[in-house]
Image (tube, rainbow, N blue to C red; front, top):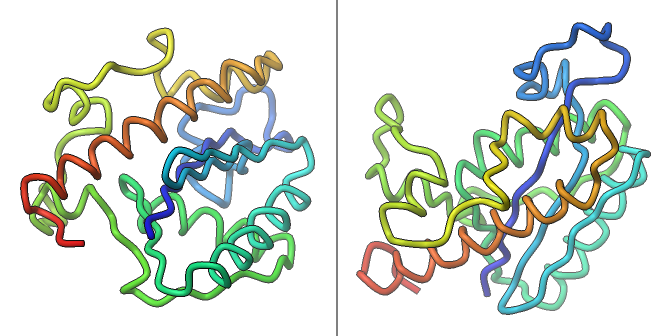
Length: 184
């Protein structure tokens, strides 16, 4: 069973109003604002102004999913170096108990499509969506715009953007399996 994961982040509110969008890319200067999960045709997006509550809910749902599907694999595009790294470190900040997963529990599509070349990881999720002919992002919103949308309170736009990323990741996973790049 595959569980697709993607998160959205924004700079910490404690940063001055001059916070830069790149502050959202570090768990030291940024925070989680949305967590999306997709399996089969089901989708769950967790959003809450209270980051600690959101993280607790995510880890609780991940534990329940793990109990139902003990051999599941967590799938994403850069899921190890960004999403899980961010979730774990923000959980550390809030003292939220995590579910420790082994290396074999992850399937990072970015690693597979770049043939595990860590210093030449070119291309974003949208680049690969274009490569395989998948409809692009929600209303042409780019990831770097998410912090501004968060600041403006445009929660539904963020939710739709994250849902689009989850769908694109699922299609990319299916195509990677289909061509034999990833074995099931």
